Length: 351
Image (tube, rainbow, N blue to C red):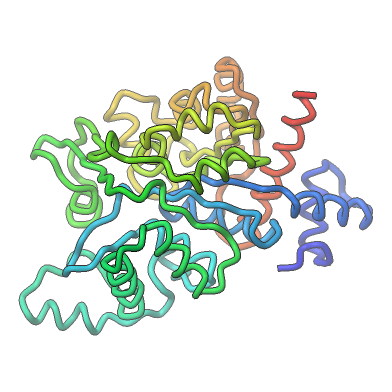
């Protein structure tokens, strides 16, 4: 999308700069500056995909790297399924369902219906075109390719001009500890609709995982690192648990900015606030900032929670307040522009 010649983009940047009008030369300079930045986004779920989409529309081809949670991955019907990788891919390729935020728009479910007729459980929804992704990924993995290389091939075939990286190539699985026992993430979240009281989480296999060279290199050369508005415990923490990941992020020269996934004490999607509460963390935007702690240089707070600003600043984290709810593509681009402007301000403060 060409932003530098649209009235909406002009109004957006005017808002960013605190002006009603903006010189077109200034607009062009800003958009060209931001397009050159190299950005790494840590993401999972629909919130992460929305943020990645906004950044993708602004940055130059190849400038965005998305490191994606694979703790949700599962084997189903003999296929390797990676829901968060797929959601990011489909979103950046313009294929994602506009209503659900995941899966493919207007996908049919003839295969799933036939499986149900055969007496199989069909609680995990799979569309027919979506199945093609899982079939090919499973075939590529069986041929000996890594998950990183499989993802690169799939994304390239969809015309995506960004690097989408799994958090690691080894299997790491989020296990939810409940009063009913341990549950694989998808059983807890999809089959049981996140109704169980959660006692704890573990990320099985994380100790044996290895940070990929691709992820390490992208983080080291980044101009900005974004922790997307994804569930801190279910989407971001599995990434941070990969040995070497937290250290690489902490030692990176780029500013690290997180966007709140909790607004007004409630998650925009999913059980983030409930999980934070169940596991002893503050179920608020300030609680999310405290959870990430010294990993952050900046935190984007929703205007609804502006009263939490001093609490976040007391943690030594700089803040920005704006409307963080992304209902439209324009909202995603607007928020991404604001985050890039916040990055520039943080860099100026370091100088």
